[in-house]
Structures are given as C-alpha cells and as structure tokens.
Length: 325
Image (cartoon, rainbow, N blue to C red):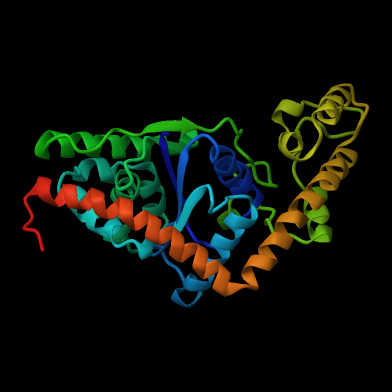
C-alpha cells in the first residue's frame, strides 16, 4: 500500500474551502492508502502569529480534522512538533537545497512582498515541507495545481540528496485532486481567511444563509430573466458537494434557461449545507469538550509517526556520515 502524506497549518478555524479542497479528500483516501496527516505547527511560526493562541489552534484543528471524518484507526494523525525528526531532516536537506530555487518559490515571493521583515524560516519553509514528506517515505502527496511547485522542489531535493549520499529517498508523485478551486464569496479569489471571503466550517445556520445570500454569482446575470452560466458560478460549484446530483443537474438546466433565480439557487444550497455542517459541528464539540481523548489520539499518532521517522533518520545519519550516539 502506497503512503500518502499531507499537512495543514493550525492557522485558525477551518473554512469550507479547506474542507472541500483538502480534508474531504483526505477522508476519501483512507481506504486506498496508508495515510499520514499532520497539524504542521512549525510551519505556522514562519509568519506573524499569536503564540498564546497556537496551542489552542492546534487542538482546534486536530478536532476539526477528526470531526470531518479522518479516522485514527485508519490513518496516523499527529502534531508536527511532536516528532523532532522533522526539523532534523530539514537541516540535513538544507545542505543540498539551492538558495536560488528557494528564492524563486511563488509563495515565498508573494508573502515576502507583503512583509516588512522576511524570516529565514519563511524562506526555508519548502525545505521543511520536503522533510515532512520524505521523512515518511511518502509516495503520493495530495496537492492542488497551485501547490505542484513545492512538491517539485521536494522531488529535486530527493534527487540531490540521493546523488550526493546514495539512494535513500523515492521521489513522491502528486496526487492531484479533482476538486475544482473553491472561490470565495466575493467571486474574485480562492476562499481564504486573509481575504475575509469564507464560510467557516463552524458557521451558525443563520450566518451561513446570510453569507450565501450576499455571495457573488455569475457576473453576466444581472436580472432573473438573464440566462445563467453554472460553469462560472461558484455557488453552483458548491452544489456539487452539498446537493443531490439529480437536483444539481436540474438547477443547471433551469439556470441556463433563466427558470430559477440566484436567490432561490442559494437557498437550495443552504438547505444542503446547513445539516451537513451541523453534523460536523456536533462531532467537533464532542471532541473539543473531551481534551484528554483528543490528546490521546495525537499522542498515539505521534508514537506511530515517530517509529517511521526514527528509522528514516537512522539511515540518513549514516548516509551523511554522522557519528552514532
């Protein structure tokens, strides 16, 4: 069975874009792969953050992942900083990482332009990301098209390490998600907390309906009598996840024929989203109210992850010539 590795930062509450674009996909992979999932708290400290909130955010994220359907009986779920070998392998990989490649990473360029001071952590972020993957000998990494560049750097670091120290790492392959990009409520950019265009996974029903009511749709549909284009409407994209397929096809046909308006379309979507998210919210509250249980899941996950990580690092230390303890 191939190994899948993926992680998510504890940067606040999950939103619908995170859920549809990543976590929902994780759940579907559990029966076909050996899945290893991590709350990557070391990644979260490479940009401005609130230290007082990090621990709580980490537990919140772990509870949300479990509430969405990741099963610790089928997958390994742990907190990145609980396995020290992540940072150890990162340092080793920094010895083969080309400075020019790191400086050209799109995410680094975008974030550094918005920050007055750029940390070395932000610059070397992709090396830690590569360490996360290679540490577990992952063969598949679920990514969106916008994340392929980071995976290609991981593959490059594996090649460079192998060329210098001998064959050690396989080059992980992308597992491209079929989920379309989930646009924000403004219809202008991908759903993102920093842009304020999200629906939180914990959104109360009334707030969710209000947000959908104000959401951007097909820009060419200014009146109800204007024919719609479901293929360019983000509201219709979300119907594919929360509305029965027969109803979705009917909505598309009526939209094109101007037989249904955007307000009605949004109401149907809300009717599907509310019970779906409320079920996740109930599971989340149960998990978050039992902190001992949550810690036990993460402790068990870290123990399982550590066995794999320690075996990898024992080989890596030998390859690079470090003296054994």
